[in-house]
Image 1 (spheres, rainbow, N blue to C red):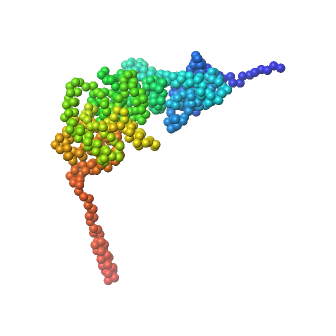
Image 2 (cartoon, rainbow, N blue to C red):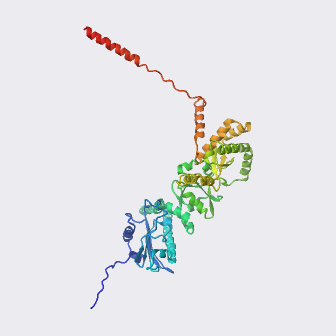
Length: 493
């Protein structure tokens, strides 16, 4: 007897085929089949790893982030499917990609992995670690290419703007231009978490980060662009955090930087600040928060001498104010607020506002305090330890501060000066983004000020308003009399 074998599955696995033989449509259809996504992928990479360990892989970046991506961030597994000699071993596998890349879809097929072992043993396999390292590198290279293409596309467009013949090409470029921007909008939190978690790839990830700045006009820019625009004498990368771009633009801490034309990174996202703190520096330039004490700015010798003289002039006020705030926060109306005042000093960063509150160099910023307070399982004692001591900085050129200095020099027991100092500190806390635990003392001060503005005695006792008596009853009696007269006339008739 002669047996003839007929091959039924004539179609070759897509990742085994050469890149040139696979069409764009086939890649898109394959992505939709493995990811259950209705959209085409944003970008993909198809490669064969050779050398010590050989494997084939196709990795896709989705256009849209899954709605529950950050909800299950700590428990969600990598969505890359693992094949060993074309046999599916695992639909989801922890060890293939780190947590922050759990949105990447694709397949990995290796001939070097053992097929007849359990998944637990496979996870401990050294080959898996090598594969994982190469996959991460390929994903980051793909992201870098997207970011680079967008930036170079923008430069090309500026150069070609003078040539009218290439209008059609420009339109096509504009469509492609937003690829990295679209990706960043969807997955920026993942990259920031990667910057925080992945020590080995932190420098690569830092080049992919995008931030708003005081000069970016509503667009997010890379740290490289920030460095290109830096002033020659600038030694640090300045940043600030807050609830929104609009509130940060009005912050008193920013005033001197706007005056000196220094660019500042603006961080409205909760993950931005921890990400930069973990980075510490970029291309040798340290990240410095402008909302913290000890921010150093370039000064001439004349400016330094002048500032020293001003400090001596205001020493009576700063010493008196420090005593008042210590009493207020330790035994007064703000005892429960947990605010600790380290010092009161003349400010270098204020140009318009009378006062500003900044935190110590290693303490939480106002934005971080808000985030920590909003945690369900937050520890109040730990929070008060990490909050950092506050510094009240005063603007020596402001009329209110000049008047306050004169009052304190005349009499340190001046009640009006004490109340003004208290209100200024509380309003500075609010304007700088900090929270006041008990706002009742500030509210009562505001009510008194409003009363004085209206010419009303703020200490006047409350009186019940006298309501005029109703005068409707006599009219009703008159109507009754008229009705009776009318009845009598009818009876007479």
